[in-house]
Each structure stands twice: as C-alpha cells, then as structure tokens.
Image (cartoon, rainbow, N blue to C red; front, side, top):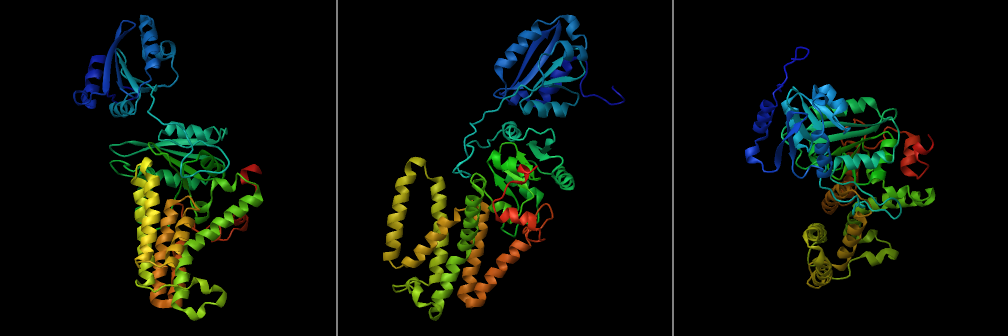
Length: 474
C-alpha cells in the first residue's frame, strides 16, 4: 500500500516474476526471455524481448549490477541513486503497464524487497537507413527521410527545431496493438484549442489496432466523412517538410511503424505545396508552384474539354483543326476515354507488383505492343491515346496519391456529364468539383479552401507565391 493505493507487485521477487510469466504467457512465446541474476545478495529477475535488446548495453549493466554491495540495494531509492548507472529508467507499479513496456522492448527488472518493477529503456528496433523517400524527391535539398521507427522520426524533426517550446507528446491507441502516436508542435505557434481537440479525439478512439498505421488513424479521426475523395490530411516522408509545417503552426502526427507523417490542419493549398518550392529562389519557386496549379487543373479539364469540342465540331476554330479525330471511330470516344482511365490504373498496379528486374522490359512491351496494336485494331484512336497520356504524366506533377485519385474521379464524372449533357454537363462537372472542394470536411473545422475561404490575403499570398517563409521573419 502507498497513499491508500493497492500495488500489483509485492516485495517478493519470486511472486512478481511468476505474475509476469503468467501475463506474458512465456510458455507460448519463444522470443520473450527471462533471466535471474544476483544483485547485492538479492534475487533479481530480468524480462526482455529478444530482438529489441541492445545486448552490449545490457552486458555492461549486468557486470555493474553483479558488483553491487548489499547496502547499494537496501531499498529502491538507494538502488536508483547508487546502483543504476543508466539514465532512461523509471519505476512501474502496474502489471499492465509493465507488460506493455516489455512488449515495447523495454527491459523490466524485479528485485527482491522492491514492491515495484524497474523499467530500463535500452531497446533498439530493426530499422532501415534514413534514405530519401522515393515519392517525395526534390531537385535540391536534404536527402534524408522518415523510417518506420518513431524515435528516429521525431529526432529528425527535433534536429531541425532546437527550440525548448517544441513539444512531442506521446499517446497510445489500440487495445491490442497499443500503437504509439506522437503529436509534434510548437507551444507558442500552434492553435492550442485544436491540439486539445485532437488529443481528445485520439484518446477516445476505441479500436483493437491501427493495422494500417496513419490511414487507420485518419479513418478513426474522421469516421463519417469519406464520401468526398479529396484528401483531408497531408502526408509527407520528408523531415524538412514536417519541420516547416511545425514552424508554420501546424501539428505533425507520427504513428509508430509508419514512415509517413500526417500534417494537420490541411487545406487544398497545403496538399499541392511541395518542398521544391522552397529550395529555389522566390521567382523559380513561384513558377514551379503555378506550373503545378495549372497542370493540376489541366488533368481534370483536358479530356472533358476535348470531348466537348469533338461532340461540337462547329465550335472548333481552324487553327485547332488538328485536334479532330482523323480516323474512323469504331468505339465511342467516351467509352475509349473511360477504358483508358481503367487501363492506365491497371498498368500502374502491374508496375507496383512487378519485380524491379522485370519492370523495364515489361514497360517496353506495354508501351509498344499495347499502345501500337490498340490503335491499329480500332479500339482506340491516336488522339484519345495522346490526351490520356498527357493527363497521366501530368498527374505525377504533384506528390499526393490521394489528390491524384480525387482529380481522377472528378475527371470521370465530368467526362460522363459532358458526353450526355454537352456544354451544360461540362459546366456541371466544374461546379461539382468546386462544391466538393468547398464542402470537404476537415478535422480542424476550417474551410478546405482556407485562406481563400474565408479570405485571408496575407496567408493566401504565401500559398500562391513563393515568398520568404514566415519563420524566417521571426
């Protein structure tokens, strides 16, 4: 008993060891190891997970413990002050917390005469190197990237922000997985009400596990807002992007086992923004940004607008005669464009699942055989193939997969409406696109078009033009 609170552990180390062996089901887990050591004449039981342990560190600690005298371990306070040379140590008096700590890779020690366990955080996780992510590459800038280890990811951001007001709060989600989630923000820049709201939502999540890491967390945070395809969150695997977001007053969320950081709150301008915009002078950065905006709009409107003109050849001026279909059309143009939309996705999925050594020859086969014979057989006309190829390449002008598929869905809807309702259908497609952007629900409650709606010129100017970063001006 301490302050009227019943402890899970007794002063008998043997009882504590037996309790932990039962809770950890050690008879069914070969990788959970247990070892007994004599420390200052007292029995001590160590629990740890094989593969999560820094063996060199633990060997040195064992040597130190075996050299302790009886007075060094007369009570837990003396032991922590005199007999524990390691810094990352804490007391645990709850068996459930001890089980979670051990399964997380922390070594727990139970010493005879102590009614608490001693948690030694000397863990290490299997991790790959912090190489540049293959999707968020830049022409200039740092070449490191997030990995699946939470501590490494937070360290990559903290390395860039040496501010005592930088906070990294850790939370746990998942009744079985007990996944670690970290919220990173700067105390005097972030919206504190939003942080409080976000923490409350995360703590109220009741699921067994975050099976798909950040995606599972995203779906738990916005349970009823998934009809609209436009992304509610911005994801990045770049530490510099995450650090810039934190310095701009945003919250960056990390989920253990995921190399992607979630940036909140998010507007459409945030999703379209990329690191390359800031690694070049303002004029070049502004050009790159506007190029991306224009290309993004073109990916939605190019094929519907071409279909509109093809259906109304009298609208085509002489200088645009070359866009007309030159060959006989065996398959309706709308059906051609829809088939190409699905075929391109099929080729993309095939490329993802193709072994690297075979990707180049298969790409050549797909380009020559499929492309050439699809036209010669009469399935597709060359013009439809050309414009869909332009749209496909243009889709990769921005890094967000989610945004690319959202634009694809809008394009398909606009194509169908244009084919059936002509000019009115084309206009309706654009209106639907704008309404989907305007009414997209975000976790912060702000408009998805912020700072355009509500209008904030100072903020909007920074989204449209590459100016000096806000944190460069203090």
